[in-house]
Every structure is written in C-alpha cells, then in structure tokens.
Image (cartoon, rainbow, N blue to C red; front, side, top):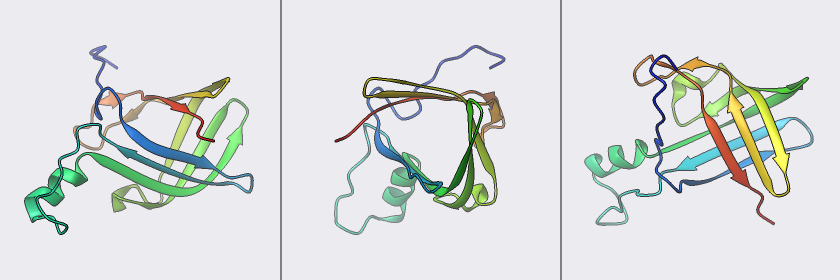
Length: 124
C-alpha cells in the first residue's frame, strides 16, 4: 500500500475455487498459472517447495457483517493462518463475476501492508 505497487503473485491467469455455503462455511484454493510440473508422480523436496510457493488453500467459517465478510480460518496450507481472521472489506457481484477486496493486512512473507483484490467467475 505504501509503495502503490501492483503485483500479480500467482500470474495473469491463476486458478482455484472459492466456495461459500449457506450454512456459514467456506473453502478457498488458489494456484499459480505457471506451476512447475514434477518430473515424477512423487515430487522431490525442491519440486515440493516450488509447488508449495505457488498455491494456497484454507477453510473455515464465515460471517457477513454489513458489507464485509469475515472468514475465520480453521484449516490451512500454512498452519500459521489457523485461528486467524481474514476480512473482505468490499465485494460486488455482477452477472457471473464476484470481485472481492480485502481489508489491509500485513503479508506473511515480508510484513508489508497490502490489499488483495480477487476476481472470480461463477462455475456452473
């Protein structure tokens, strides 16, 4: 935020799913668009690290509070996220597109304050 820098951490066309259920649960997965493919079915430790750095996954429960969504993380690819909350400050649905803008937070990799904008297309 302080630098105004725009970054596409997972590339131009990342993949994944976001699921919010009516009974208050959610699941997010995300994958970079240029993920390396291991040479064999069982990745080496170096390949496993590269794969881990190009994805995220977490789940838990959520609440809608006015125009905000607050996710309570109960399980995650990064155990450090478990027990934390992630807040979506704004969201907008237009046709089959959902745009979500996070509240400011400090990145786990470098501690820099950031805002994340994520755009999803509905899968039917």
